[in-house]
Image (spheres, protein in one colour):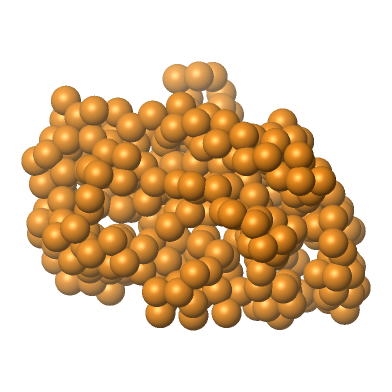
Length: 298
Ligand code: NDP
């Protein structure tokens, strides 16, 4: 039976480190601030934004929420970002995705000042990360990397397979693993014989968005499995109309084969918000030319 990687507990230690660094910054007269923009009333996004705001305040930082109606014109969102870029009390800016269809997502992302881009999605940060330079690193892959480093120490020479090639998870995850000297393969919907490929992985990261797609027979005995997926499925055993969360990995069968595995919920999810807080404190330190917190970035 695999060791369970407790992302919830690990995220708490990240938040403690963040809070300690915030306290140091405050003695220098600086309070880090995170601005979150939410356009529209998507219920899942509202929950994320509320959690982000709450945890930001709990670590001693300032939280600025900007909730805009779904029909807000793109130009108005861009104007708000421009204002936040220039605001010295704001060190991190993120726009909760997805945005409504009439707004160009990449325009919004690339309007954020790269040094305040705590999601790490700005084209400059993508380029800096890809070329091995100091950048803001996307939160979910950063959280996965922290869990993997804690489990393995060095990742050098390990065979890593990342299933999924999105800009927010799969691609940056692969870049980070390559930076840590893994031999990296990215799999996607067109990959041939994906099961055999996954079975060669010492590190298997699933970021697909398909409930329990990866089963135990895809997993190399002893491998470390990181399940990024968050899927809501019907749970009739909990009552009519009830739902539960599952990952992209079939936990029951995979945990019988893997050496270590993240559960869903309680694995990667809590790490994502913790890394957002970590990125905010890192951004604040860099913007003010102060020492960065240790162990909170790639
Ligand atoms: P996307 O939908 O953007 O990307 C999914 C990727 O999976 C694509 O590259 C797609 O391939 C690939 N894929 C789809 N079907 C298959 C298949 N049958 N076999 C192999 N590959 C396949 O998703 P995201 O990267 O945004 O998110 C992935 C999952 O992670 C989702 O469940 C999401 O909810 C979750 N998530 C969790 C976070 C957290 O904090 N824990 C944060 C962000 C996301 P192709 O490119 O060929 O279409």
